Image (cartoon, rainbow, N blue to C red; front, side, top):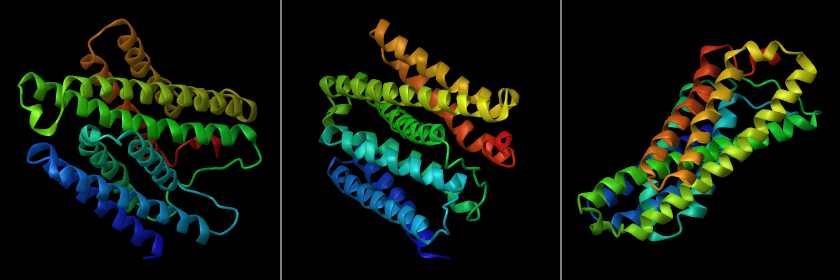
Length: 272
């Protein structure tokens, strides 16, 4: 087992520890929240170090696998989360974001290094736009899902008059609504850009055969619940339905990111 794998295992352990500490902060005492936040930040640093080591020791040109892309998605998502959750009352979000990171990272630990290698088009400009936009979109959707889950939990606690013990008041709940909406907007715009450039590149290089594959259909389906989420947020004052749509959309994104890639011999198999 190499240095990169050791760092990754430490990062996952850190995410698990952060999930436990933040969960204690939500359910028991708020003094655990800051400790959980610090632990999650340390785990993010270890994950970044693992990615850097993977890139440095890889033979040139770098040929990343699907797990490598997932690591990058989790890292960018962690950066998004820690940039947004700087206010103490938003530490609650970490109790839901950190477990999502663990869920995304566990398959990476289970798969052998180099599994599900992705065909690359280094010389194509559309490839870089496609990959960069999709990584940012998945990261934004992951954080938005954590925020949506935190909103649903906090809303229920507030209705039962039990959220005051952790400082969750209606203004903080409204702030959570705005941040979730912004993350979904960022994710949807970047996802549409990535999907569009991927479709243009695939059509130019491989014709229309790509449209018949499940990767393409699931990709387009991911946009549906998020589009409904954005409309629901604009037209209706109630955020609970939008939060459920956000969680459903992230479940579809996971199917596209992991499910299709594992069930078939590789993501974007029609490109190979």
